[in-house]
Image 1 (cartoon, rainbow, N blue to C red):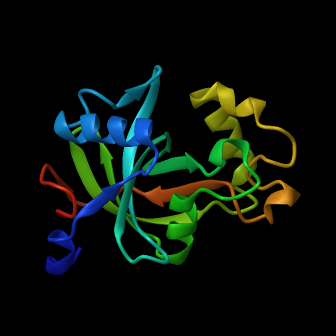
Image 2 (spheres, rainbow, N blue to C red):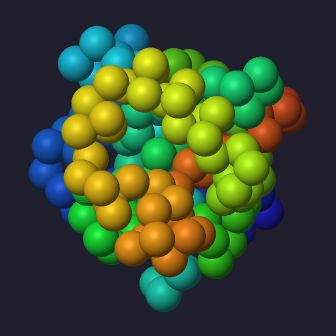
Image 3 (tube, rainbow, N blue to C red):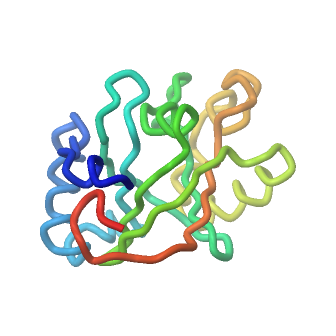
Length: 165
């Protein structure tokens, strides 16, 4: 991130319980918050595609080698989650897993990758199996572009605040 970005305020999710989760996660370096109902959780900070502001939310994730995998299901909605749309527009991302913070570059999983990543994520987070047909990542009703978002997790980590590198 640039020096200007390091000075920017990060806006947490507008959803009350998610914002509370994010605040606890940040305040404790993930001691409180890196597990959500028994599932591994991370924080992802994106650049808002319309506002240009830094936006942070908590998400359940999986790992595929050196990549972090996220499901852009929006709880089964036919619309994509804002964080995913932000990443499509600007794939540069900051991730926090526990106390570790790092920069990465996100991308939507390819059609060839999706089946294997979906299978992996159903093991990581079994409730996604209940997403209705047509609402799962990559289903035709979702434009074929939504779905499993992956990003490299290589790079220097930091124990600094949001925007640090």
